[in-house]
Image (cartoon, rainbow, N blue to C red; front, side, top):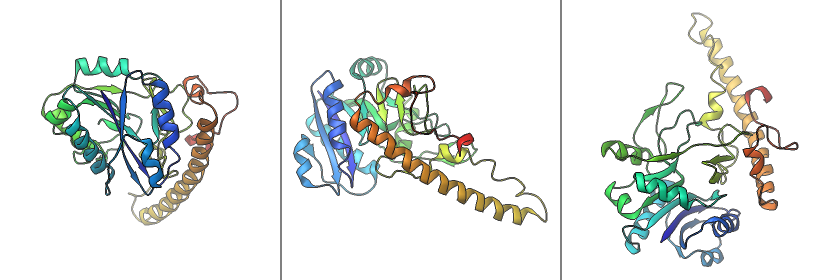
Length: 286
């Protein structure tokens, strides 16, 4: 049995979309376990099991895994899936292949300033393996990103467990041939779409901030360093505001697309995208 574990937060707009793509593309029987925060209880009936939970995202995922582990068999599969993510093709062949070779199959967002950890927007693992690893989606383990910063994020502790136990895992990498945004609107392994920030659109990502790396010039110089820091701070603030506004508009446009077109994702798999498309977000266009 496949158990889908998902979280929806303060908006029901992704529920029908996610369930529709699951039913369309998953070739094996599955059950859905969900945490629904701030959503009309009427939507509870669309899922097989709704688990009451509040707090951080990682804690909700961990609780869903525990609830599934209590009813599932050791060889059953847990598929963690962000609320704004869904399969665009049958994921089961890739899942079975990966789980025959290692601990899990998961998205790895290299494009997010080099994140090395499994990401819960899409992660498949057997119940017994999750328990063996003492699975935990919490941030914790630090790594150095491409900007030289020490960071952590959701999945950090699971990443640490994989390293500690010497466990192999299969990453699903971004397969977009056109990228309207450096992180959002991602297709991974030609199998899953992740909208990105679907419940909090517009927040600048680390991938966005990488494009602002040049806004630090002159800060180490004597005399003028203080003025450079102030000027660069203003530039970064203006750029963050511009990214926020443009990203909000872009997210809304792509959401409208996927609501009306079941093949909305195909331009993302075409070099240069479709002939008519929302404006790309990249440094040269800002």
